[in-house]
Length: 365
Image 1 (cartoon, rainbow, N blue to C red):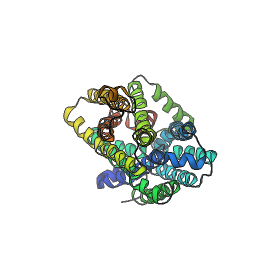
Image 2: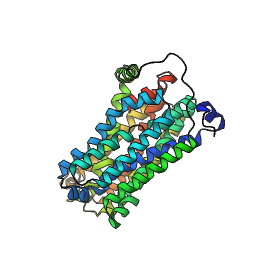
Image 3: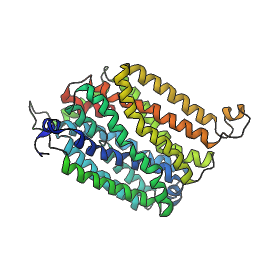
Image 4: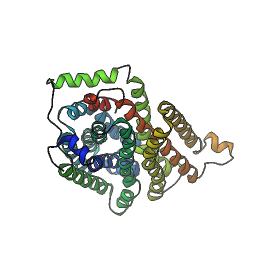
């Protein structure tokens, strides 16, 4: 594939390879951000952190991620997907190495901040590339494919990395994630084309940054902002940190057993986005699909908590706690239903001009 042909050349020769290569960054992001859910106990013990302290340290990741979205949105539209992806993957690899080397709470806090910045564009890069290269109808389907492939990163943290941690230490999980970031960087450098030269009046970086904020505040995108805020928070909470400790502490499972159950949730998160894209294309009722799926997600989370030790559902059924198989089924349903969040991206793409795609999608994310 030519280096300077831009997105149009990529479209002529097929967009699958560059989109899937860019999605490797999303695989890395999902693996490294959900790893704490599997290693929470040993990570906290080694770093001298309480449960609350670990939660505070890992919360730095999404905070840095969110703050980095404004410059990421500007970079995607100003410098192109390829350059932005290469820069962010390099930052992500450094963040994973810092996490592996962390000797205390301060070191891990710094690592989580760097990782948050590095991972900020890992979903936006393939989504923005696809939004520019594909017609809207095909983009909706490819949004699901991108999320499905990217969510395999959670498959890595659910079971393979759990076994790696059992054999070695939690640090090996972060080293493996750093290696994945380096692999993704090399693939992007080899297979993703350069963007076409900028046409039209030049704008300052400050003007572009203000436009990201303006898009985030715009009435047209506001419903999607609220939806994204709640949906991504649910995934980060359940799969990113809460799921592992819940299964180990409330349900008495070991690390590998808990990771195997989380694997069901992750498998559903991997299959769900592609399913959502197909259902959206067939049904055509995007708003109803988004609202209904997330009302169901809320019910699933409430049922899971209600089946815990002393929970109302467990008490109603006359048992101290519902068995882990109950949680396994609910986690799978959670993964399938929450995956309809992917419909945010085609919904947003339909509301903005092509040249604002990177800024609009980043504002939402």
